[in-house]
Image 1: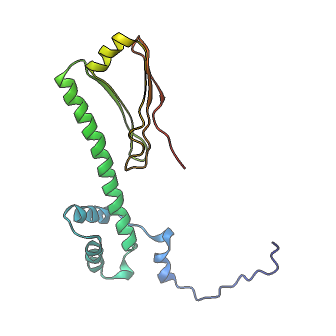
Image 2: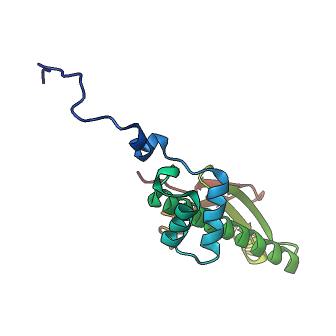
Image 3: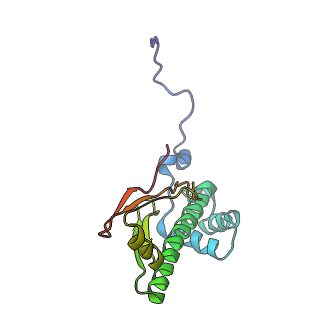
Amino acid sequence: MVIRKCQLEHNHCLSPKDSRFMVNYRSIDDPTAGKIKNNDQAGISIAKSYNSLLVESGGHENITYNQRDVRNVVHLNRRKSRLEGDAVALEKYFQQQHEYNQEFYSAIENIDDDGRLMNAFWADVRSRAMHKDFGDIITFDTTFLCNRYRTPFAPIWWCKPSWKVYSVCSRATFA
C-alpha cells in the first residue's frame, strides 16, 4: 500500500469540552470510587448510583466518567472481594483441620498480581499413612478442569519417601 495524499487539517470542529469523553481523560477519583463501592454493598443499582453522583456533581459536564466506568469499578470490586474471600475461606478451613489434627499439613501461596490464589498444598493423616505403605506417590487430578475464574486446575504432585514434595505442574494458562 502506498500513501499518495495526506490531509493534515481537521475535517470536523474541535470541541475541548467534549475531551472528557475520551478514554485518556476519563477517571474516577478515590472518594467517588468509595461511594460507588458503598452504594453497591448497600444494594443500590449501578444506574441509580451513577444518577446520584450525576445529580451531586451538578450534571454531565462536571464529571470525568460515564456509567460504564462506574460499572467497571463495581465489577472489579466484586471480583476482588470474591477472590479474596475464597482464599481466606480455604486458609480458614486448613486452620480448622490443623486444630482438629496436629498431623494435618498445609501450605498456601496466597495471591498473584491479579488477586488469584496461586497454589495450595495439604496432606492429611490418611495420605501420610498411605505413603508409609506405598512409598513415592504421584497424583494427577483433572476433575476440576476449569474454575469460575477461568484458571484450569490440574495438579501433578510427586512425593518422595523423605516427604519432599515436588509440584510437577499445578496450573496451566490458556491464551
